[in-house]
Image 1 (cartoon, rainbow, N blue to C red):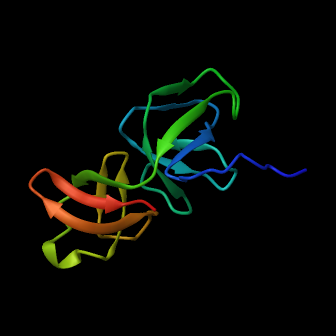
Image 2: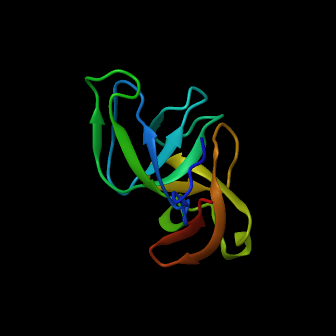
Length: 127
């Protein structure tokens, strides 16, 4: 069956099922596990960073996929753990926690690419 007339113009807004027992705060980095379920990003290997949570969700009492989180992909300002410098622009950065990025890849997953550094944080593209 064709999906004529259902063109999707932007992939910047996506909806992802949330893992059981997870709560995701609005404005935090969202990660996807190998099983395909979302959680708040944390310093862990083998996660895919989806983007920024647009609304809070609570699946602490639910099973995998019982709720979904709205995620926006794009460029966002995240906290700098202090390791990212101006010379790191256009380099990959990694998750330190759900609001913080680091230049150190050890034990973490790629958050995105550094586009700039400002007084209030690091501009990271999560595409």
